[in-house]
Image 1 (tube, rainbow, N blue to C red):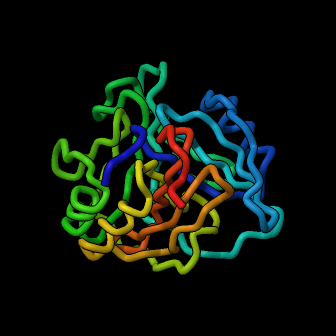
Image 2 (tube, rainbow, N blue to C red):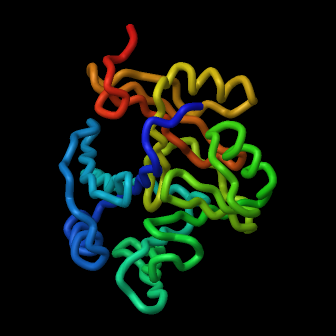
Length: 226
């Protein structure tokens, strides 16, 4: 599939808005962009993360007690001399690293996988990322690190506590979905249009983690096809 923008958005959900805003804005230094209403009592507080966005989704109602996903740790490059392991107010792991550590000059995400080889095929053949080294994938300046770990429990919903999904911006969402289907990727949610601005849906990686494919007119520079 053809990506419309470098990097990938990281989506997480919380019921603790104010502590989370303080952590991501003050401790991590991420700049706030804007807030959008997703419906169902969820408001998305968007923060700049390298080329992409950290999507802090605040749920008005209590989030369902879903198991953790395979998205285990966010790595953010910053002006620090040594790595600083942190946790946000909900216990999500974040590590500040010196720029260039582990090859991270912007940000990266660690994905735990029981079958790393299946993830390798998924990120290369479905998403179209470049493999820089075994288990290391590039999306613009961002990096994905696939590390061996226990199999995560399958979750039927992308809305739950903690890191829940990634977003890749694509040039043509319909073509991206067709390409994903052609190589056997699981579809999590079919494409829908959000007004005349965005067309999006979800695929799932080999262990059920949710990945949004989004065609946004602000990145493609053209209206959504009818």
